[in-house]
Amino acid sequence: MTGPWPHPKTGILYYRKATPPDILAERNRLAEFGIKVTREIQRSLGTKDRKPAEREYKRVSEEVEAEWDRWRLVLRDGPLVLTPKQEWAIAGDYTKAFLAKHEDDPFAAPVAPPLPEAGNDDRGAVAKTLAKMGAAERSKLKADLAAYLSAEANLKTKLAFRLLEAYPALRQAFGPDFSVMLEEAHGKDTDNALAAHGLSVASETRRIINLRMLDLMGATSRALAARRGGDYSPVAELEKLPPFATCSPKASASGLSLEYLLNHKALSHSIKTKTIEDTRSHLKKFIQFVGHDDARRVTKDDVRKWRDSLRERKDLSPKTISDRYLSALSSVLSHGVKEFDLPVNVASGIKDNRAASPPNGSKGYTEEQAVEILKATFQGSSKDISEPHKRAIKWVPWILAYTGLRVSEVTQFQGKNLREEDDIPYLFITPDDGSTKSGKAWAVGIHKHLIEIGLLDFIRSQGDGPLFYHAYEAGTDLTALDRRHRAKDAGVRVSRWITDELGIAAPHGRANHAWRHLFTTRSRGCGMDKETRDYMMGSRSGTDAREGYGDWPPSVIDAAINSMPRFLVAR
Image (cartoon, helix red, strand yellow):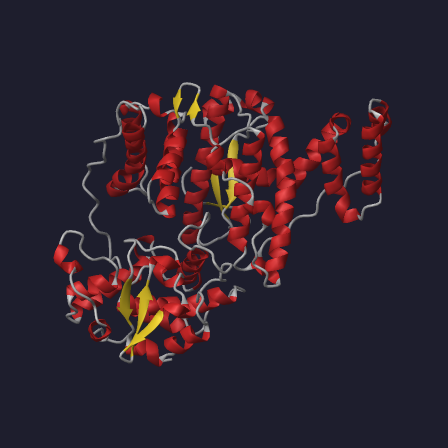
């Protein structure tokens, strides 16, 4: 069965797929590793609307396929045993990402479920443990037990976990209960953390990660509570932890790992964080495909078979396969050849050379769709969202419509970069606010229609800081964040508002990028100078050196932007 399946009673659409025969046949062996296998995977897509369900179906399908691939690795190699540093790091990656996802709107963050109750019946375990201890250790345990017994009910479970970690004899006595309590409390968090790195671990490693989650998710909950009060200071418990990537071993038993090569390249080259993370994502898919991370064991045949498997995916164009997936692998292997003793880049020259599919519909909005979206910005969203995201829904579509900028360049914009020269205001787009595709800065004119509906007044009312996300702590280097920039969430919010709330289909699936195409179309209709347009859109030619000569006075870009016809929208 392919595509969303409607539940016969509720009409809610579901993902349904039979478990592959090779995995189902090994379900008893997988059960020994703590992996429960069912004959069919069935997950709710949470909607009756087919379009959003199809997007969710694709995401769930990729998640399930990746999980099955991890199980195959477990069957072949056995589950992994992580080092203590890796256990802390993998829990740290997950909790940092959880906090980053929810701190823009901490009031909308999911409430932490109550911890399971820790019982007081020790079944003689305490007396047996005390009998085996020396006087000093016995005295310390008695003090810790007294603190546990006198604690408030909401603290008892956490103290119980700490007692069991500190005293192995108690852990042995309470072992089954301890494991169940940990799994009930944070098993799902651990599942998500391991899935993000494509790992399946030994049961003891899993229990320890559950315990680390107890501490770190507690720190995250306290941080979200602080953010609800306006305190966005760093979380010490999370900041001190290393990223899991830096804890990965340099080499497998037989060779140099792809993950290590990527991390080394990131440290030794000036590469954007997004590029590194995109490359890491594509590498993980290759690693899951071939079943190992050893650069020396990768063959040209492996790469060709991976390319052929990617061709079977209907959502990937030949250009995407070549320029993203295969290019990511080739760049890392090339680094191994240049700086290590890897003999050859076996991915070199392997591409998807099929002709691109013919265009299917416009890449940008129609004039009518644009007007409908711009009118709707004055009503905003029907959802309970953060103030920065309310501002984004009101203003980001307008700015995109009249500038053609990339959405991240708008959502990361800082009030201090509204500038004026000879009484002409303009927007200064700079990578210092996060990143720009070219890594350069430039100026963009401001259309008079934007001024009339209050854009300048709005920007000035926000001060020098960001317009569309909660500001980072003073002094934060926005070009070197170790997690997703908060501005990205504002762009996603605007995109979902257009497609989900307004019900306007995103041309080629890119609701925000469609404005860039519409701006280009309209610029041709009004005869805007191409060089000026490309400069303001941050996409100047990399082959014509003459375009780098001279300056761009505000009067030039102001005249160009105001040659653009107005959208027929009345406030």
